[in-house]
View 1 (cartoon, helix red, strand yellow):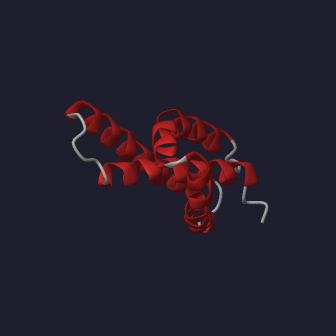
View 2: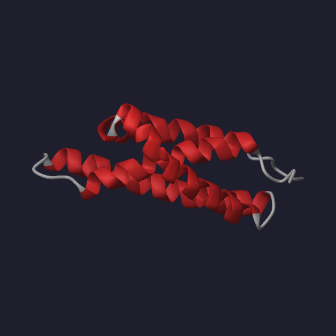
View 3: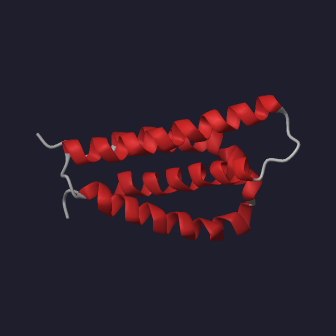
Length: 116
């Protein structure tokens, strides 16, 4: 289990929550400005792309099976994000994602244990 960096995984979990709530916000957009819709769509797409890149990077540089474990842990964390939603609200998580997921992405990549 030394192949799993728990700091990196923790940041991935928060990253997943932020991106999930931005995607949820997109799904429920009604009557908002075209500019805001474009911005949140670009942010959510970039978040999804970053998440895939992270999993591929982790599997390539650490060990092939680790991204599967990390992805499952991230899914569970996204489900537990509903508790966080009750505390701060959907909009706060969605808007917080503009700063939250890039910050989490920086740290989750920083804590990847490079073998070699």
